[in-house]
Image 1 (tube, rainbow, N blue to C red):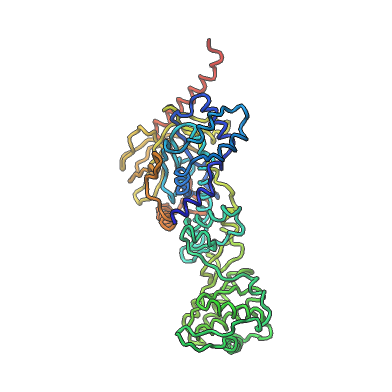
Image 2: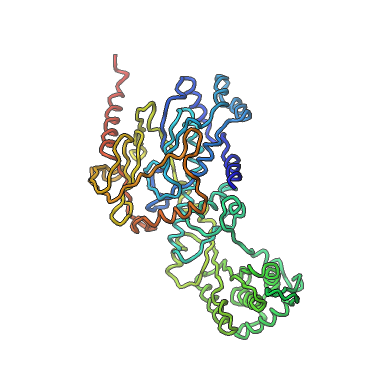
Length: 547
């Protein structure tokens, strides 16, 4: 499996998957002899997605595999020779051919951690030209993974812990890689299953799925059912005529419910029978191809009762249109009637799956209405992140040759925080995080139960004094000298980390609507550095007037 993942990252994120200007900048650095200068970049985002109070950091696993496999092939270099200006020094291409990430060090927040806007998630340090070349690829790997993982976590919070969630958005995703990434990180974010078989193969995610409406509507008569028999699950070798058995049960169901047999669709019954014969242990049909109450539900009950008689265990039904809440209540009522009338206790607890263009809003509404839905399948609104299509991660230079660097901007929100930093999370007496503190690396780490003076990065920047009950360092060294230095977690292990991390949040930060803003602050020393750089920049603007 590990080799399959490494092969996947090489195929999905080849070294040329970047922007052209990364190469033109790298050439300019090389041409001026600056390419090996030690530099530090940080990756972060400016606003929490979906109007929420937090995000989930994802994609680091792939970033590490990308760094480990970073090489330019002869073919890559020849292509670059054809697209860079003709005046480019040929020796630069020899430089590229020998390039790797052996001189790069990566410090990162652990994958699956709850994170907040303005916190540097990754610090990438190394030779200037190399760490510049990494920008686009690292952003590509982190941006969507973190966004869709955060979206999945919001769906999970909206759904509550009882319901199972099925991701089924592959056909609506932005291309094959978008679909694969969505399946992986929605599972990490809290979904239970995916319909994506390749995601199941690569990442060990449970896969689920039965039939579409096209399967049901492809049948028109019971004559199309073949074979027509099924052997009992207890090992009895006698072939049972499932059509005859089901017809008998159908009559009893219609009598119990006072239903008109003339409205039952024969082709639908044929489809259910054919599928039940193929998968008697996994029978879960979609029942709204024609009419749920007049046909689909009746046909399902008849086939399911036949399977129970033969000692199989059907799974349930799927609803894909109309008022899912109302229909689920009606379906459960019929299940209970059949359970009681025919003395089959398991019948009342058969699964009801709901799928019908589910959004975060409609998911939240399920909790406000009476319903009997056990599993919710979500596609379009989950994988395309319709409420916000991009997280907006950026990758900014903060230090060169040991000297801090800062970007100024006409928009103050786009200014960067200079210098190499350590990042600490402050926890209150109940273990909830309440503030993330950015300090210069050379500063001593803050201590529990000791007051710290700091300045919020956004909003009211007045100096505050806070006293944490606990302090944790957020970032770890995960890659150096060409080697991954921390164990890589499986997808399932990262999923567990996500749930643990979310549970630490205070409810006011987890609210889906109008959550409280989480404070990200800088130490007093870092605040003073920012002020000094701003002042120095203003003074340096007059260099043309100097003698």
